[in-house]
Length: 391
Image (cartoon, rainbow, N blue to C red):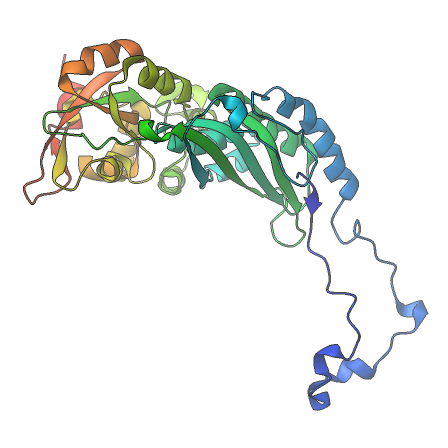
C-alpha cells in the first residue's frame, strides 16, 4: 500500500530462452556483446523512479490518514493491504457496496492552474455519493495516484484533499498506490482513481421496491459543475478565448479556474441521517454523467416515469453561462450537467414534509413519479428560461 511502483526492464532471463526452439528467429544483435567499459551504470533512480521520494510521501501521508481513522480500521498505511473489521461496526446482516471512479478531465484544470487542493475531495465525493445512494454507509477508501515524475508537494496536497473528503464522508483512508512511471505521462501530469467500500443492512438497501405513482422527487443543490461535463467546459473556455486566471464570467470575484474547481459536494452524512431518522426515503440518485435525464431512471421501475419541473430548478449562474455559450437546449443541459441538482431523493407524498425537514431548508421539490405508458422515462415540464424570468 502506497509503495512507489515504476516500469522496470525485463531482466533475469537467460539470453537464449526466448529463442531456444527457433534459433533462426534470434535477432542479429544477440551475438554482439558490449564490452564492460561500454556499459553505463544504471539505477532505478536514473531510470526515473525515486523510491526514497515514494517512501517520503508515505511518511507524509501517515498523519493525514490517521485523521480519518474510524471504528473498524485494524491497520495503518504502508502494509500490503488495508484491514477493516466489519463486525466492529455493529452490522448484523450486511451487504457490501463497492464503487470506483475518477474525476474526469476536471483533473486537467487542477494541473493547468496548479490548484490541487480540491481535486482529492472530488475523487472521494464521486465514489461515496455513489455508495450512499444504495442506502450504504461508506466505510473505507483507497486511492491510486499515477505520474511520470513524483512531485512530493503536489502528491501530498492531492492526498490531503482525499483525507479531507474522507473525514467529511466519515470513511477511513486505509491505503492506496503511488505509481511513478517515467515515459507514461507528460511533465507535471498525473492521474487519479478512487475506490470505496460501504455496507448496509440487507433490509435497508435502496432503491426500495415500493416506488409508486404519486411519489415525490426532491432535489438537493450541487456546489457547482462537480466532476462531470468538463470536456465540454474546457471546449467552451477555449472557444471563448478565456484563461483560467481570468475573472469567471459567472462569478467575477473569482478566477475562472478557481470557480470551476469548486469541489463536488459530499451528501453522505445528510442523507444517512435522513434515511435513519425518517425511514421514508425510497430511492436516491446521484446526478453525475448523464444528468437528471439518465440517472433518475436507474432507480425507478420500468413501468414508471419521472416528470421534472424545470421551472422549479434555480439554475446557478455557471450553468446559465454554459447554456448560453454552448447553445444547448434544456434537455441537452439536463443530460450533460447537474444544472444545480446534485442529488435526488424519492419519497411518498405523505412523508415529504418530514423528509424536507430532515434534509434542511435547501431541499426543494422538482417532480413526481407518473405512469410510463410507453413513453420516455423522463419528461420535462417548463423551461429554465421561465424559471429565470419568474419574480
